[in-house]
Image 1 (cartoon, one colour):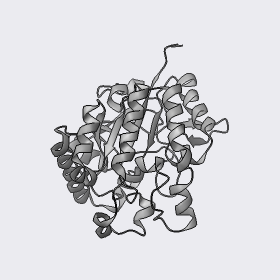
Image 2: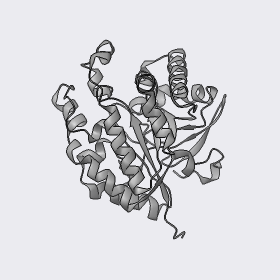
Image 3: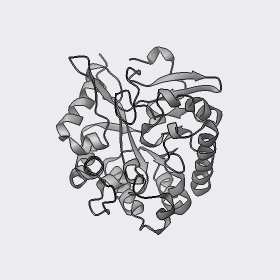
Image 4: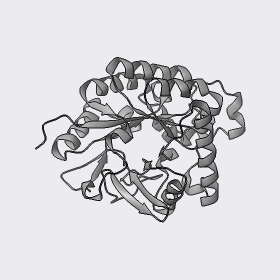
Length: 290
């Protein structure tokens, strides 16, 4: 067995606190320009932490944010991180037509490239909304020049996920070309069930040891990288609580006070790099493992 530490993927979905799908149910798009921005100071905290831990990550940037905070996008690139795309409007892919998705993606790419001079080649859909009903989106992404996607969560969930989808990085062939799919980290339990360990709400809501044990299992038992993600608003206890409803508020705000320390601990205990640094565009199909 390979004894060298495995490089995992750490990724940040750069969006404002009013962009999550749970919040958009109560905060309409026309209100966004009037809400105070909080994304810049929280993202700078992440950049400083990554510098301290000598970590390079992938930043999936919302086009809407790139247009309004171009200096932040340039700073992310200046510090050596991978620039990637998180859509323009943060709309769920399965709520769009292929033409609408193509237009949204192209607008996001232009906004990000205009901000920092880098045209993103990796994509992540809002709320992991590439599902069986929107699998066509991968062809659109390949058509738009993307080489990597990280939009599929191989779990069963009420809003997203593809149950039974391969759990590790692998290439997918589309009529417009191949694209590397990098699913968010999961573990296979002894009863055969698949459990999410990829960060985000699962890192906020569950004890740190749950995520750490999951990453170790993926690395040591399966000899594969784990893809971890989080958002700047998840380390911001002072953000306005805009989501309504008990479930939405729990999903969105529970655990934000302890999230920064959990990320710092992950960065200390595991090796992390960028998405394309860990999974090159020419990864052969023989390396994909379900």
